[in-house]
Image: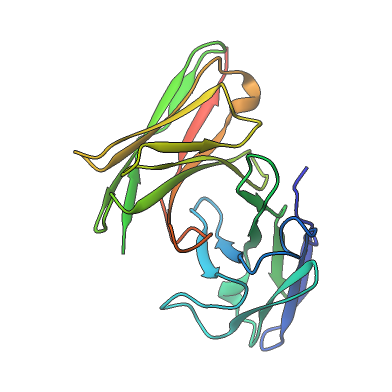
Length: 112
Length: 119
């Protein structure tokens, strides 16, 4: 069972905006600004798209943005495109004993 | 940007061991932190542990402690992850990923190594 809770699926039409939530606890998301988001296409390695809650690595589209409120982080994809249809995972640093990183179970984004 | 290249797919018998390699290029291996993660078929990601090659320091997730060993060879900029006493539930794709000491995220990933445990 994943430590962070994500919706199993989110869908939207091309051009729309969608938001994926990622809910943790005060031991991870709530207490640290170390939330990151990864995009993973089938059969490929994950790709970092957001780090430290809201920062984008160089080369990542500005259509991706991140935020956090309390124990819940969010990834927003604006101007949804067909190429955005894939899986997204959130992750957070955690202060739980001997575990540095926790992940969400993943969200499948479908472009209608 | 750091490039990570992992060794190829493995098929193993239950009870045996597997050792996966991850060779880094294009960065500074001595200042990097290499983590290993597991992705079960059709499932999410799970952090297994990490090594700081310059210090030889390792940290393991409790669920993998004792059965997983992570090492690094600074002379070849290669990290290794060995799993012993394999069981069918260890069938998964294993990734190495790079982090650094100033952040808690993974900015470069290996291509993944599929390990199949079957009798």
